[in-house]
Figure 1 (spheres, helix red, strand yellow):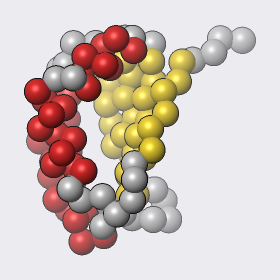
Figure 2: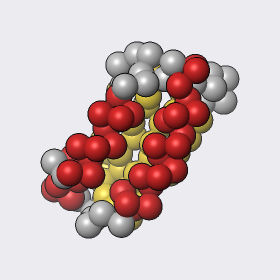
Figure 3: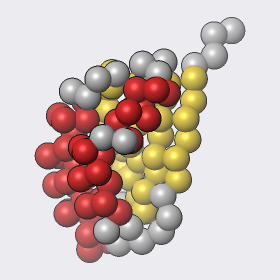
Length: 96
């Protein structure tokens, strides 16, 4: 299982537009092969900073999504509203 976190800072006046993009896209992302979960988080103290938290069966599934037509629509529309460069991290769970 791959955990993917993407932190995005938006221009404050564009957060509503981003939220609409996410609302429309989320069901399609969740239905994408290999996606187990996707949710949106908002920073507690900075209302224009959001992170997506998604779970993927594998890195190959995530990369297939990133190469898909769906991503090709969602990411440029989202990217148009950024106030800063996004940051992304990929993790795997550690069993101790």
